[in-house]
View 1 (cartoon, rainbow, N blue to C red):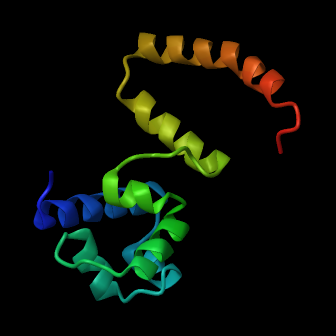
View 2 (cartoon, rainbow, N blue to C red):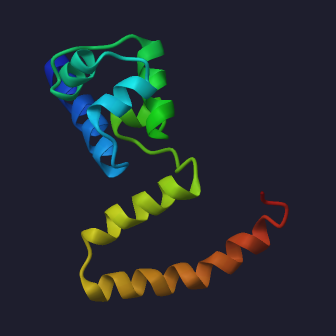
Length: 121
């Protein structure tokens, strides 16, 4: 189990990675989450902890669950954009052949998911 310093560092790293994936500056994220630039900087460097309302605010702006920010577990993407970002992240670690096979698999299973949930939004 992580100690407090390791946990703060891991949370900060996830916040920074998500901010950069979304192309946000620190100032934009701080403003959107109603945090000071200094406080966000300290969070990203693992130097400060935050209250639950601040954690929730960051999660909402970054479009992830608080569970992901704290534990690194994804309960499932919340929007098509966040799903696409997660797929891209995974595929960047694959070889060209693995990417081709993954796409073929997705193309084959997508109709099955649609058939299982005909009333989807």
